[in-house]
Image (cartoon, rainbow, N blue to C red):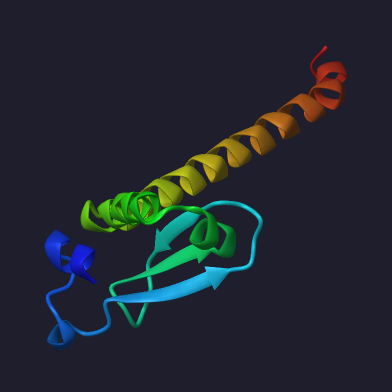
Length: 113
């Protein structure tokens, strides 16, 4: 909790749920944060990371992940995904239109000639 208080993300119990914690059974060493509807954020750490990293390494990894929360990367990620979806949809729409035009050329060509 000191990292959360120092970072300013959480001021104490009156501020509500600080973080939802999940321990993920995985052979990988990984930590990640994401949005959570009931808390400030969710933190997921793999069992291997928890059991393998030293206290200092774990503290540094947690500080890094909390940095994502503090810098508002959730909103930026959501905006980026919306923009990527829009771009994919536009590309798909254009390639479908272009595909229809290319398909129609053999039919229209003899009529025009």
